[in-house]
Image 1 (cartoon, rainbow, N blue to C red):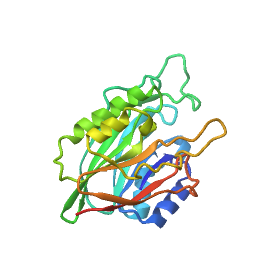
Image 2 (cartoon, rainbow, N blue to C red):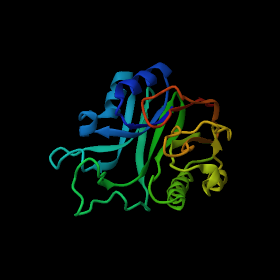
Image 3 (spheres, one colour):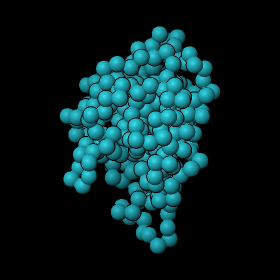
Image 4 (tube, rainbow, N blue to C red):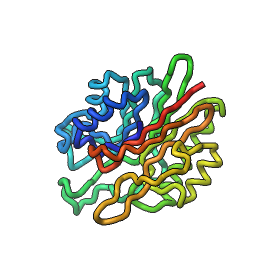
Length: 252
């Protein structure tokens, strides 16, 4: 499963869906920790506890309008699995938007999403029996342009070179870009990643809104000896401003 859960604002519905799908690997973006808007719950830990899974959480931003100096609030990415998780690390992208930076003239209140931190990739090794699977859980910048997002993707793909070609890798997340319309296609092809949806992106994620057309910005890619089948966008789920994606992975 891959899903931007929009902070976990509808946590009950998120957990209900994830429990029903019984996924062995769940990659989440925009999970809150100790934020006022989500009742001070550590969203990733609550999901993992309910589903009886291991989890890794990476803090993307400190949310200045959602906590205090004594009790800071964060949001970020989480990777969950019933299998053991190890060798977890983050890639904090070198190029970031300045859009979120605090400004002296803006009050630290909810309408102004002032933050400290930056976009990242959460890298985790999942041990499935004797087989190791590497996951890259991405959240690329929503502000700025596609050149910025492609530079963040390129930094991720440069990191992938550390793994041999026979190591199965899944790269997924909210890329905030339409891959086939940008240089990202060439970058992923050169790095030997395959689109798990086999270029069939008739369903947009997030859905169409009143103020604009829907876009395909959530993606799942694989590399190495791993097959992805039964790709699905779960359009009936209304727990976030993004639809969840699922694929069935087959390992050697």
